[in-house]
Amino acid sequence: MVEQSAPDEEAAASDNERRSVKSQKSLTPAIGDLSFCTFTFFLLILFGFALFTDIVLCSVSIRADSAEDDGSIRFSFGPAVKALNYVWIIGQVALLLDLLVTYYRYFRPAGRPNLRRRISGSSDFEQPMCWTGVSKLFRVDLLPRGFLLLLSILLPLNALFFYKGLGYPVYIRSELAQHGDHRAFGSEVSAWESSGNVKLDIYQRTVLSFAGTNLTTPLQIQSNVCYAPDSAEFQILGFFQSESMPKQAYCETLLGTLMVGWRKEIAPGSAWQHDEDVWDESFEFSLRLFSSLAGVIADQSDGHAGFWFLKDMTDVFDMFLMTSADVEQMHEGRPLLTAWHGVSGTEYEYHDLVCTAMWIGTCVVMLRALAIIGFQPIVRTLSYCCSCCATVEKTEARRVVDATLSMFFIEIPFLMLRWIAWWQYGVPVSVMAVKNVFGIYEDLHILGLVGGFSPQEMKPRICRGCLKRKKKSDESEKSPEPPEGAEPERPSSV
Image (cartoon, rainbow, N blue to C red; front, side):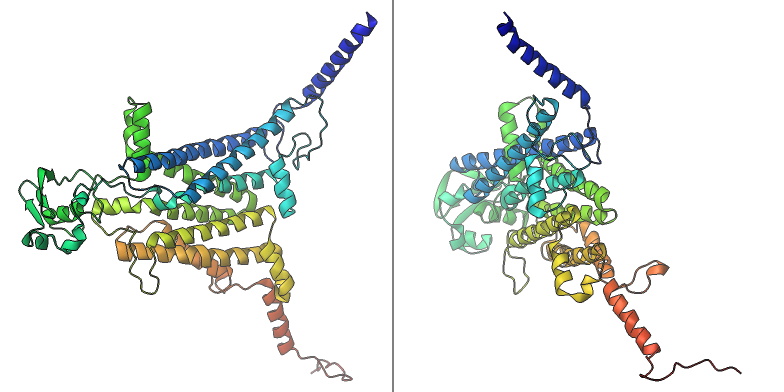
């Protein structure tokens, strides 16, 4: 009887030990210098909106393939884009599971040995494995704000893989293409008629024959569909409306069209979800929320520098939204951004230039985020290579590095791209162009090339190392050292 009760006593003792440990722990422990509720709330917001963007991206990717197979949509994302998206989602799931395990280990210790590191400023809450990995990789003491900052930048980056295509217009399939190629007829529709290749009914707006073939049913050229600019229907519509680029108000984005089709299948009664603009605006809101959260966290971590970090993050995602500019161009009858931008010497598609500049800007934003958490490779390199920079404080040197990167890789390129979009295509100027102009001035001021507006900053600023050298040279010029052996000059008494 005693032998049977011994295991029960040991189990009861271990249960009592777990209860005592659990009772000593707070239900809302401090996560570093953040409260438990604040840290958890930010995580829920970040992963919640990341889940929404992932669902949208996967749905659009899968439905674009099926729509291309049945011929309703002639666009699909490449295998590299889809593979990168799935890899990124797997990484997001791994991060979420790592955090959930950390929360579980805190609230249900189960007597396991505590081998993980603790978060700085928190004696009870363990570091997630990803947290420890980042700290070891960059050799920094990662704080909770820095961890949230990195999450707010990394989680939505898979949306950038879909820049080319996500906001492109969805065109209706050409019915006349099966009868012949209109490009062989010439560029003017009036010449098509005179040569007998096309027979039109101007009053009914129908096509009676095409490429010498009489249509059994006249084709109605409608104004409530979206014709591709390279189709014969588009050319004929322009002829009927006496416009080279006819306005097509019913063009919608690939994202909105596919998401509306999906929602009509699974929720036919939800009328508000059947509007393409609702999905476009929801996706845009989720991306802008990530940039706003990153700026708020950076602002709390780095003071005034976080304000410019917020604007740079918003600028990158605002440039990403140029993916849907062609839909508005079709509405207004303006040239598409998928064509060459007309600037000699750079014969590339405009969207290619935007995509390149957007990824470079993302890398710059990531470098600035790493600098906020303490990883500053450029500042270290400059301090080793330049004796002048070695005398400058790290915060001041980092401001100079951030200003240089921001001006040359975000402000100037983005301002030039927005000018090209306005001048060559007629795209309305984004409000972020004003940010680019003032951002260039601010960066020039930080670099010491222009003065400020306040009376204390009227003179151009220069780095402190150069200032010390300048002061020494000025002092040596004003008071030259006496020659060796000479007595110092005494003041004369009158």
